[in-house]
Length: 111
Image (cartoon, rainbow, N blue to C red; front, side, top):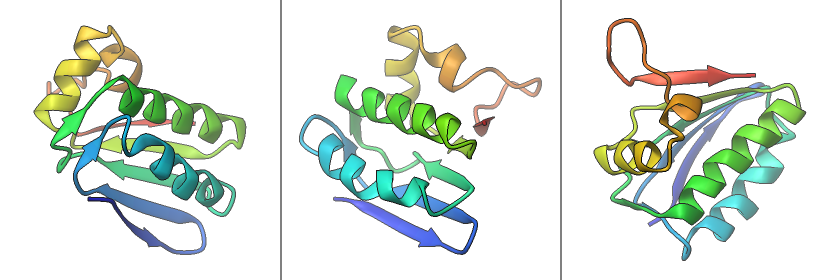
């Protein structure tokens, strides 16, 4: 369980390895918030997310908001079915995962 982070001078790629729940959201925030100040772009790969709850969604929203505040690029990549389903249920799919012309949900950029 955790995050795998690959970083260079301007960009970080974060692979979420397991769950995004109330049990992990605060830990993930503590690890990712300082990273946002060090890079100009962050990409969050959600393909391996096995479980997500409202705390996980709040984490994504907080990361997006902080990225926008810092004028950073924010990208969500390859959301797992569980992520897509919860975002749709909460009516956040259009905000976080807007439909692309080719109808895939590969990712969305903000910032």
